[in-house]
Amino acid sequence: MTPIIRVAKPTKNALTITDPRDMIFSSQYGTLKYYDIEFLTVTVTPLAPHGRTVLTHNLGYYPFIEVYIDETGSGQYQYVPLSGGGVAVQFNFKYVITTTTISFYIDTLGVVGSSITFNFICFIFKNTLGF
Amino acid sequence: MTAVVALARAGKDALTATNPNDFLFHSSYNTFKIILEGLHSITLAASTANQSFSINHGFSFIPVVAAFAKQDGASRVFAPNSEDVLSWNSTVGTIGTGVRFNYVESDATKIYFNFNNDNGSTRDIIIKYYCFEGIT
Image (cartoon, rainbow over all chains, first blue to last red; front, side, top):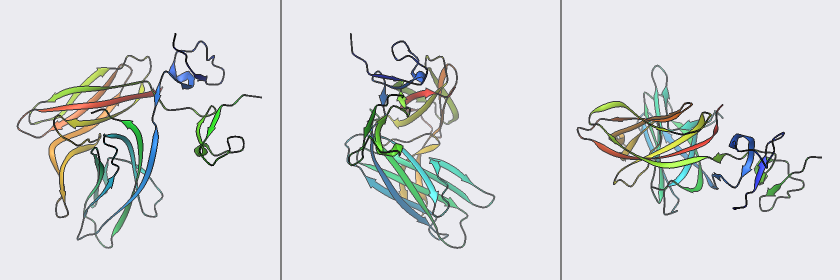
């Protein structure tokens, strides 16, 4: 019999529960292993509406990542990949993962006036995607 | 008094810390458990948008899902709501392969993966999917 470490949610019995929703933790289930957080900035302008930045992780495999973006000063983070915009402006944010790098892209259309700076926040987990 | 199991980060005191971010584990906070994960291979039909594929997840609830995709033979991974980016230059921006991962979603019985393939030939795709805890 394999030993199990299990922490139940309040009012649940750790010895008898089988539904993972009733558990705070169970050694039966994997978790995302937090590895690193990276902050990256990309600026686009009316004359340079496409941006890219590349982060080197050198893990040697494709890692599980979560990415968010905000426009400098907005304080409003949104999940990436993301497409959006308004009547006159369109934004497209995306990324590509390799075994050594993560590339972050911004494509815009209709940006006028001054430059716009965006901040990517990338959470990298140790978990391999297994490709 | 409720018993607590807590493991603090290096440099933090498990007995006095109150910020959840100071803990590697704390029994008062739920962990985001991976209850299912796997690889699933599909073939996209040529020149067809809105192609849906599904697998059964086997849970009695709707799980939170995440997924990533890779074209067979390629060395890059892309995410839902994104095209497979082949290259980039500052003049035109991203240049895609013609394959787009539109979305991943789940319901009471299945996980759905939706793609576009703008190419005139089929494309083989490998999907890595995760199920986390239930939405409901």
